Length: 601
Image (cartoon, rainbow, N blue to C red; front, side, top):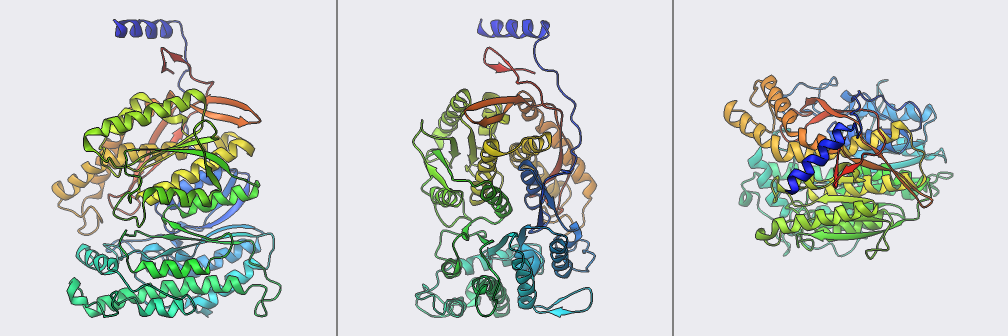
């Protein structure tokens, strides 16, 4: 009876001509106006390029980047970059940044792993310091290049500079250089072993390096015990040493500004943000590196879990500082019962600790329900497998309650795949996805925390103090749609099919479509067909959603999403792990209305 009544009501509404007509999706136009940020990406993966562009444009910035070939990473056997290598062009990037400064730019977000090592992956394999040879033939050591770059940027007091770096993960990259999966696993096991604790920071750099190969008792770990050769371990430790030495010199350099070595220079407008790359809850080789680097941080610097979200955090924090952000009260609710544990094998501390660290970074205060400015909802891995539906249904009820009360909400899926597609299907059926101010769930759990909070806090702050335009609003919508569609549809549905197709039908390697060389056109066609089917119900939900468009001065208003279409799918690194796509949006509409609690177009 209820279904017949609902169907009749919907039919009457449609016959009466009620509801919004779907607006036709159109390609995005690049932002033409706004304060410019000169950005050197970590590499060419989507989280370091396209989504950073979306976030910057949603805050009224224009993101300027070098040519993609200058920061691209190529896996083993893939076509090389124009500089003849698998990694970024350090000289081109160095000269590009100096050119931006000469042209009057005063906002910078710079990945030091790219500028000094040619990208994140190469920084894990570059075992020796190598000179940077400029276009005029000048050869600079890495230290000399860093000094020239930082002193040049420090000479302009109007500059605002974020320097991003990483603590090297426990093992290099599979399919890059000469490392395969067996070598990765062996080195990760070697790096995961406990080391003696660094007792004093006075000689922290030298002592940390000395302890790299030691067990807690001070004896040497033997390479053969891990299935490694002495040469492989030496190469691995040399790469760690080089990265730590570069980070040490960068922080030392900033500390010297204003001293007798660099009179007249000030590092006040520089911020250093270091991310801990894939880690472990074990007492690993990273422990002393982290402790030593923390001892060198200045006020305003930070060292946090996660690397692929560093650009999000830097752009968001740059905006917050420019508007004079004084923080916000946020209520936090976990569902699943395991927030007191690491959310995946690549985290070194419990999920709630990672959330707390990011709260400190963004000047957020945890609030009691009812006194918050916004809300964070987190689905953890299930403490009880039999209660999975109970956990995510409770979260959805909380989300829908917040939606009814107009409470801005950030949603994190930290379930690490344990819920399969059930949680996402329930969200798509029962919630209004496009109303969220941010969502994340695609990458490792430390990264999804920083991603969701960066976008959510930035959106909340922009609604409070920013000047909305069609460009900023569509950039916000794109970043939300991108995060939801890739997680719901690719990671949890289509990727499994791609993995099976590449490994089974094509006898290929899902981590690198060039090793062996397979028919990549067939893989792309499989991706397109799979995504076209998988995105359909999620896009239908988005097109019936409203989003918060006004949230300041006691006022609250919403607009309706227009049409949404995805196209232009591809694999950025010719591997199955991630995809990129273009998101086309139609013009926004008046708020969508509801019939018996269900939104319609």
